[in-house]
Image 1 (cartoon, rainbow, N blue to C red):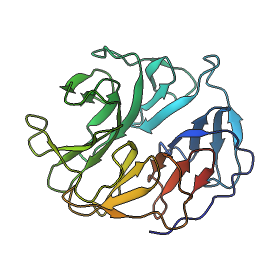
Image 2: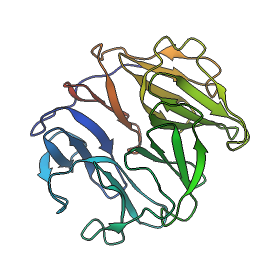
Image 3: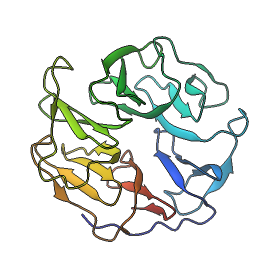
Length: 245
């Protein structure tokens, strides 16, 4: 897998999150605030959510057009008018800091938090139920979804956990994964799962049974986030290095 820098015009700071929720815009959140691009990442403008000095740590558009956003220190919010107005989406949550939000092919939405806590919503983010708790003391930073129903969970420090029975039992899936501080995960249309670590990217084509490096063109630094919603493009944000595609 080969990467190259995006234009990154108008974007600055350390970019923690990339999101393409399906409304024609690519969103980025980081140390210098929030940004939006309407030309596939070539040019960026600053974005104000109207909620004070916060940055978005994740965003997606549900199958029925609801926009869900994670904001630093606030938690999940819902918007039914394309982001003009926001309401809390925290029913069932009991974690203060949510680090990732991702949607599986079946429409289920997953969110990861500190202390090894994961949540799942089957009603487009209106309510949430705990998927797991305390399987790892580490922060949950990403989810991957295998073609056979496997769910993979990336953590800071413990690597990747996998379940084949919807969370009833978990096992480590770190074979050939030389870096176990996972900072981001993404699932491509062909079932390939990406894991961004503290230094490089790995991929698996067998739902975590084995991993191979996939960092050609990327600097050796922390991978903050992926976005794969635009057909034919995979975006990655790297620590103090902008956005790559």
